[in-house]
Length: 325
Image 1: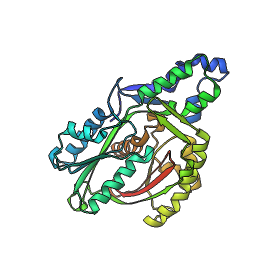
Image 2: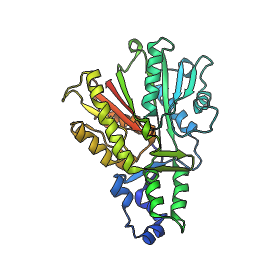
Image 3: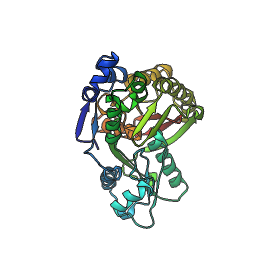
Image 4: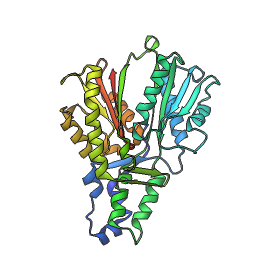
């Protein structure tokens, strides 16, 4: 699900145009440095659970299930309604899931959705559940607007702009996947497995609270790319990937510079990638599954293809997942 309001990078910069002039910075910095031309926002005060509920409803219906047949619901969003209860509980209540359904949140920054898929897949393999839903609803509008007000202040500095730059690339969205045992699956998509690597020594490169996210963009680029490159050979070995094994790469997209460097260093052609960053921005953990859904809708992803799903998130963590579509 994509929000209704399209916000261009130029529109964001207009909110602190006076600061840019005072600091001698040219307009167009957000799009030039990140590659994000526009992003989408929900209506003001939209609850993450509200949009996640709609996404889950659609996914459950598409899977041919009824809400009372769903056995697990994992919410993987960064955005949440409250510190407690878990946003998954609110979504489950909205959907009318039964008392038997296991519901909880998984919080792992931008790798949260893939982490949720891993957790649910393991639950299915262990026989704890037969099916479940991983859902994510991201709402960044209020946080971005608070950042714009700080950048528009008379005392805003170049350092403040630099630390808050990543916030200006954020977008919103909602997505849900139904996962089930292979022998009862209608779609026949297959999760082959997942490989993870972490670099927790870099855990302060991106620090976010409700109204503010401060990030070291250069540090995230350098160490995030390094972590993806470190993880790649383990994934290639695990899934038996050769130079031409992968048909499509669906990745979490932070900036075009980050994306291009990863593909160059793992020696994969960037033409294999589905690019949504320019018109969606960075939608956090919703970015990758939204890109996958758009790729399928556009016919870029076809049955039988070998997919590589990968994400790097603040923390730092990296997940590379193999999927047979």
